[in-house]
Image (cartoon, rainbow, N blue to C red):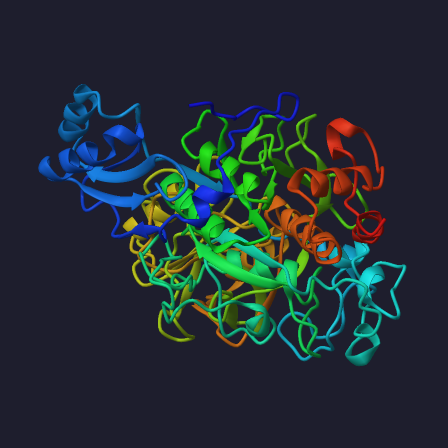
Length: 575
């Protein structure tokens, strides 16, 4: 079997006939996780399929996902000993461990929100009352020039809503379905529900949630990533919220990620999306180019006429990522509002085009926004902007994990990097960033009895921190270095009390988010616009149009062909 997993300089493809897919049964899978065993990705020849499946069952294993509707592969859960026996049988051509790909999201770049205001943001965004608007990224790729009667030639169409943006619909994405392989979606979101295909009622017996094994792709763990990606592509023009690149395209979500993205789930999503006949697939995640198991599924989707788009990754390196680096996939890097390369974006000659990726205003799922609270009560009543640490507890609402207590400068010399001698029982520990991991600081504070931990930055602004694999028992949040200095001074002068909390706020439906995860759907939306005006275009023709009409904004090794342009791509597709 020929596999294609080459960078853009060496493109190859495995062709699987469309006829074979048309007669293939619906995707089958149980999605029940690994049942305590290892999960393995297996390929085989057609002649050995049934014998191989029988042996897996005889060895006490279970087929988790069956990909044979598109290629000769499956994912199975079994013990390492069973894997060894299966390998020795010769029934499998390849057996490899399942691996986890990474979502390409970043928190918004702290302080950069001010760089986008006021032209790009209406008053009240994200958690107040605001008029529907075209966010800066959609405007930068000139999507509004395609379908708006009043396209704005500046940074954004701030305040332009209602009938003004509904008239000149040369292309809106109507009739096109974009498959979003991601964390799932908020089916009921006010700015997306009209454009989302809802499979939760299981009309065809297939599963599209490859994490929990369910028919619908609801975001069950409140990640929000998939909802935000879908928002960039196709937020509805409905006088609320935002407007997407292709505001009348349909979104079909596939839940293949939950924090990480198992390759077994990604492959399942690709197979089902191919069987569903979507027109475009967006993949805002990535992993090593050494992972070749799912390449037949990518190439089958391409052979079926599906345009594949993926994020280049956030490693700030030139290391080629998969799937973006596969020859059948458009690889998308990221810029900020000033056309500078995002600080995190991957670059290199393998990147095809660039899209907006810093501080993108998007929809997010209800309950996905976490509010962190640090309020000083005495001696001075004041509030500080805070961020919760990843892997610290988050309550379903305010007050559940709330801590009101004395705040103390816990370890001003050791920075919390060694066991803390002071008794912090029932107190809030204030610790400076630096010298060791956040996990070490929080762990040492909790071991000394702290009821909550605040880590303040060692520079002026705030930051987003992670505890890694350590799960704290109590709230752990960050504040800016400036605010930390204020609290240190307060503590030195008098007993200081404060309130710390971290909770989900279901009322907040919009947010800022950064990453190549969100530059990629700008290009997927452009692909939907192109396909909507010329449905007969092949994937390679769509890729060629998008790259050849991109706006040159700098060196090709940084930006690829340049900034993707919806207006120029649609015009080229109509010629």
